[in-house]
Amino acid sequence: MHRDVSALSSGPFDLLVVGGGIYGAWAACDAARRGLTVALIERTDWGAGTSSASSKLIHGGLRYLEHGWFRLVRKTLVERDLLVRLGPHRIRPLRVVLPVDRRGRRGPFQLRVGLTMYDWLAPRASAWAAHRKLDQHELATRCGFLSTQDLNGAFEYGDAVTDDARFVLEVVDGSIRAGAVAANHVEAVALLRSAGGVEGVVAEDRLTGRRFDVRARLTLAAAGPWLSGPPFRTDAEPDPIRRAKGVHLMLPALPTDRAVLLTARSDGRPIFLIPWLGRTLVGTTDTPFKGPAGSERVEDRDVDYLLTESRRALVDQPWSASDIVGSFVGVRAMVASRAANPAAVPREWKLGEPARGLMLSLGGKLTSARVDATRAVDAVVHRLGRGLASSTTSSQPFPWAPDGIFDDWLDGAVSRGEQLGLDPEAARSIALRHGRNVDRLHTLLAAEPALAARIAAPCPLVMAEVVHAARDEMAGTVDDIVRRRVPVAILASTDSAALAGATRLAERELLT
Ligand SMILES: Cc1cc2nc3c(=O)[nH]c(=O)nc-3n(C[C@H](O)[C@H](O)[C@H](O)COP(=O)(O)OP(=O)(O)OC[C@H]3O[C@@H](n4cnc5c(N)ncnc54)[C@H](O)[C@@H]3O)c2cc1C
Image 1 (spheres, protein in one colour):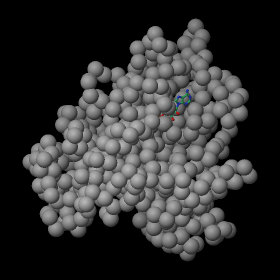
Image 2: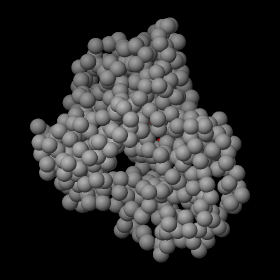
Image 3: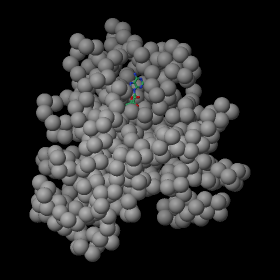
Image 4: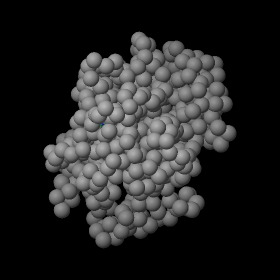
């Protein structure tokens, strides 16, 4: 993946997509595969907005059943099933343990009804995800770290987990392979307006400061929470979205491969503890956010809420503030709604069309972005008056999905990695994180065996990934590498030798 900013001036393109989160990535990929000429620009880095700050779940959303959002749950469960099949390296099944809290708001009967409905709404092929009740022995074996003091049994069900930033990166690469011109660190600073409507944008390359026009017949703004401000909206126009802030913490690993879904005692919200790259991802908060996109911060009260609610569920309450190794914050953009509580605002997606030539991608989820983007591209094709092929993203494997039988490929990739000096867990992790591109990492390791070293001991990320990110994954800054492509900045403390080592290597590679 290489950045070609000059090609952006070669328009007019059929479609310009502004925003390289999961929605922009899928829209650009789908449109390019259908034969449209496409440009995709992103003001910072691929996935740097909400799409790298999610809970990383590809899920139907069990709790949405309480709100009666059955259509949404059905849609996202169908997507979960499809994405697991199309990208088995990227979207990994995950078992989730659901303890029943004696002092909680939902009893075993209510939970069993919800889980049965969740299974029932899922496609038939999702039998792997079916729920079951856990007896005391099973619970103790799988999650012995859960305090049983207030427990009234537990269930287990299936969903899926991903690395959201790499998910976006892979789909962006898919768009480039299909012919799109895509560049990160390019910001749309103004809309190009004429009597006929919007004809593209004035863009700025944020790495050089150069400004230029990107011309297009249609512009799709997939700018997430940035849609509330310029250049997409003036203060005189109604805000098309509603925003809520969500914080996650990274804490030490728990001895399990299961996620745990807790219910916060203070407000009844769901809190996930998710095993992720050698740590436990704890989240999320959900509070209204009114400031400019990008100004959101992790605050003490967010940390207190997550720590208090997660600690109380664990034997001996092991975690304290000093155990937090990292944190991140993102802003959810939802279709504008009057609901008082952000948790009650539907996670539906909608296409806005505020002016001729301009469309807005509003709301949605990481899980449903692919199918929602096909609807945006259907509308684009319709507006352009073209009889172009329909979407293929529901049948084409992910861009980095390996050929052949997946499990055989994975066994082969792990054993090759081990021969090259990786420990077994890291060998498996890099195969899953890079898919068919793992061959390039193996080539790097064969030339420089020292790159097989882990960056931070508890996490299966290795130095070769930093080199690969700088050379082959369109990283423009050190942050692009250590926050998203190889996310050691959220998995290791900011003052750690691990982060310093990865940063030095990233700097050196970006300079050469
Ligand atoms: C805390 C939290 C947890 C979540 N957990 C889950 C989950 O587990 N599963 C799930 O399915 N969904 C989850 N979601 C929802 C999901 O993350 C979002 O729906 C999704 O990431 C939105 O993607 P997007 O592409 O619309 O927006 P974004 O990812 O925000 O992308 C918009 C992009 O536009 C860029 N941009 C903005 N302005 C400009 C400009 N002028 N020029 C160029 N580029 C610009 C930004 O830099 C940004 O990268 C969660 C959301 C939050 C906040």
